[in-house]
Length: 97
Image (cartoon, rainbow, N blue to C red):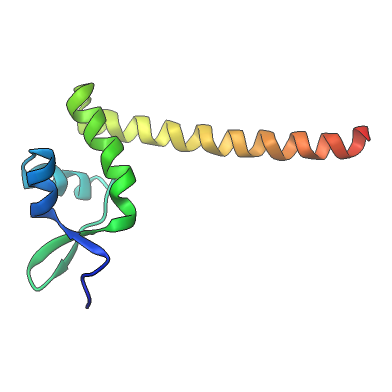
């Protein structure tokens, strides 16, 4: 398996000054997906945005893993509701014109 689209967890640990156990806990709670290649742990580059949000909540706001899970779930629900609201508004505009 090619690792060009993956980032080693050790690199993230150094960058964010966190222990590897933090990322393993995130993986256990389903917040990120860790993949093993040749006994090295990697995360996909596309998950960096989510990891940034998680790390900021943890370090800047001192939110624990369970709290981060709740916040991320609520943000997903907000996004879904905003999308639904936009669709309803667009349908309403069709009927008004």
